[in-house]
Image 1: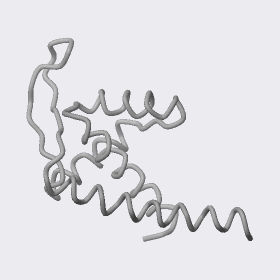
Image 2: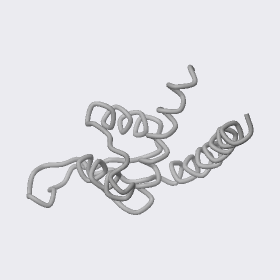
Image 3: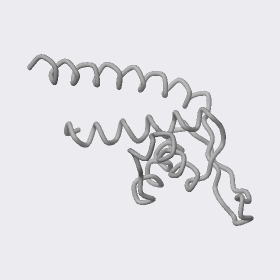
Image 4: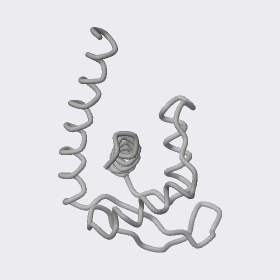
Length: 109
């Protein structure tokens, strides 16, 4: 996988897994929460988020159920599975290793 694609892929899946550690959310809530928690620095479009959610669900890292949203509309709610929790920890460590290497290059190169 190309450097840029790997960074995007890891970051989005890692962030989704982390957000779902806090509870069950629908896609809209995940997009809003990501933006809010990041201090309005990060955002994700539905065109990027929903394919990532489907990939995570297919891999058994999250599960999904249909239910009513806050405005009483039908929504799909996602939550972390045990396998997803383990995957989050592995990806978090990989991200810390990767971002540490980038920090070294920015500081010392």
